[in-house]
Length: 286
Image 1 (spheres, rainbow, N blue to C red):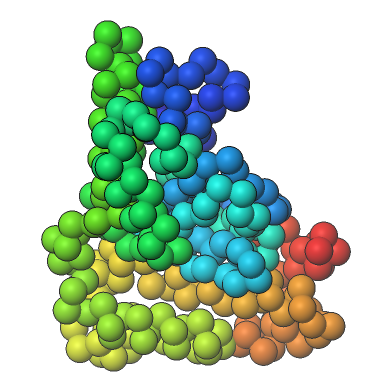
Image 2: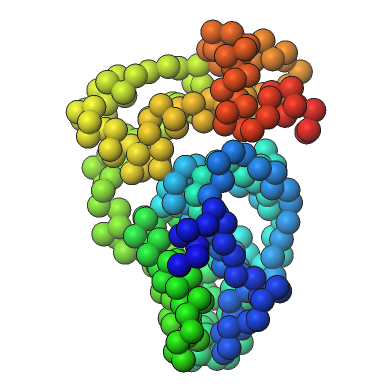
């Protein structure tokens, strides 16, 4: 499938022929971002769902920032203005699709009562929901169906869309089995990492805090967040730097010191590696 081989792949009904008998699907895509890219305010005519496969991404809507990690879905409703946190999309790998609101009879060929049930579930959907990485297979199936030349193409597309929607509105509890016993401890740990950007623990210290072996901690942490522990901590530190650069008048050296870097030069090197520009360039672009 093209979506698995290319850094970016999309199906967009505005640019390509719509899928016969599936007008509900407006857009579908996959992307892998190596360095932060601008993502300013925009909106869609339908419901948008974004599933993070790897890394961490933040989204801003109505003045609130929503964090997503691997296995999380962020959604927006039709007409809602949203953007990447701090006006960027962070380095990550993710999938997304947009569908029309389920307002009409025969939406996705469903009986009216069933489409109304989906509509009600979407209205009750939390802004961010963890559904696990098993759903990636559903996105791949949708991409394969879109690219198919089969006479059953429309049926396969419709089935894949419906499967993804069901996975989002009523996720299978078994998807959470990997981190069930560590979820609360991991969430506390992630909160501390975000609240204390100058904290520089090693894997052994982190593993000791959640009472597991370093090797088990490393595997589980990466499965839970999509990143190795040290990479995750570094990205959270740089995210805090973005906030300080945007919202304060502190100098680059002062910010570097506040975040625990040995020098402003080291800070600038790490910042450019992750964000794709220097701290000075980032501040000037705001």
